[in-house]
Image (cartoon, rainbow, N blue to C red; front, side, top):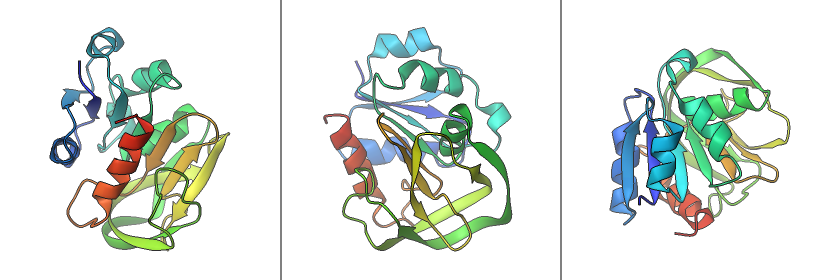
Length: 188
């Protein structure tokens, strides 16, 4: 049994998600996005983090995993995982007018549970060329930046969360707090 399953979508920071969770004392497992729903069910995770990557088309089984486990366990999508959540629930993802690869100020619009304790704003590392351009139904915008209108979002009733920025890297000083908030939702 694993507490948190981290689905790696070939992004450069997926190993940092795993390491951050381990640092926080959580039994985590880093899995490639080729893992099947059955293999993941056998691990019995209490939560799932869907990590980053370059292209939605290269997200492997991540979409099927989100559809299967949504409502069963909390899910946090980071970067590509955030975009995939939006797309699966009817939102749109397009190339950003301004691609981001820098330190950015994230402005918290709604703390919700995932951004608890981070209002009014915090610094975070952003690294993406695509972004959520139209919100999915039943999701709320939790945070934005000067260059990205949806830096964080949450489903209105299900424990589904997405962040466009990277809480797993040291350039996001309060990133561990975001993971702690997610772990609380998972009952850990």
